[in-house]
Image (cartoon, rainbow, N blue to C red):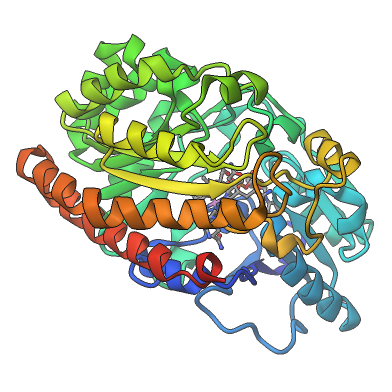
Length: 437
Ligand code: B12
């Protein structure tokens, strides 16, 4: 057994203005699952996890043999600054996370080494090479095996919620939406964890509410059904991201409800089929949405709809059309984003060729800032359109609809927790400096 390495794993803070406000009520519920998984892939080594959103960064990393940073696009500027500081102290820095796949060369200006894609088949090699003092600049994952995904080292999280835990059954999605980061990841296959491993992990959790972070487990319905049957006896309540074509399978929706699903987040993305076509959101058809939401509600499942604004097909009439859709569908909650093409992708390059990229400060690439010039609106019209849509819906629609739903909801206790979470989110959006500036 080689000498154990002292590893510091960091989730850097988001420089974005609104982050702390957004998570203030739900903050304790958010733990760095990603780093927990990387830690679980470091057996025999000494690992410390540091989530900068909740802990102060130490002045120095001396004493550690390596610092691993998980880098998203919107945390990249912060990650670069930290990495530069640690490397000056002579501590090797390794980056992982979506941003390394998107902008590998830029990342390598700040890190000694980068992991592109999954850590399951790369991080053990990084550790081996570090121990043998032959660290390579790039490690490219070719992982296709979900069985390699371990349960996270939750014992290393500083504080966790008593009620809520994050968990993952699978990675990957078969859809091809142009704006999604998954299009640009090295591996496009679904990686499905062993059913028994998911069940064992959930059984060991004291938390009753599970938030599944799967990209789209419903691409593999047989697998999904198998997991849901297996977790039903555990009596958990759970949330997940789900696709718009769930209405094709009422049996699956019934199984979701029986196994404790109280809420789903659905990427409706747009109220326009023109956008669905041009943005390759080919699984979405606006005419299917009413049947889908009715089905989920009939089974006692709350529906959060996410929408993106700023597609080339959007104009000033888009906000009223989305409002009409949300109220007609009777969505329980709604979350809005500004279109954010990721640097390093062909999608971004196309906007760049058209001279429409407004910023190159990656911390703004968080879906909360307008970063591309809209085609049929001004930036201000887009920003104001989203802000006032939130305000109109929050004031006139959200509370009466939520009260009605609570009165008729099956999983009332989880609904209350969810409602608390969402009211705070809505409140924060209303006051959000990003939407106010
Ligand atoms: C859970 C989640 C959240 C949670 C909690 C985030 C958190 N701080 O832990 C909440 C809801 C709060 C959230 C919020 C946001 N999120 Co989020 N989130 C996710 C989600 C669904 C799961 C992340 C996760 O836990 N995955 C499970 C782990 C095990 O897998 P993984 O992260 O992919 O890590 C693997 C590899 O990437 C690699 N790896 C990653 N880091 C490292 C580091 C090292 C050293 C190594 C070796 C390897 C490595 O190894 C891991 C194991 O194989 C992802 C999408 C996804 N499916 O990954 C989006 C995602 C990370 N979020 C994203 C975004 C944009 C946001 C928001 C900005 C959205 C918004 N405007 O509100 C905010 C920002 C908040 C913040 N500061 O983090 C984007 C980031 C894209 C990008 N290019 O940067 C993603 C990819 C979603 C997307 N579809 O675009 N998010």
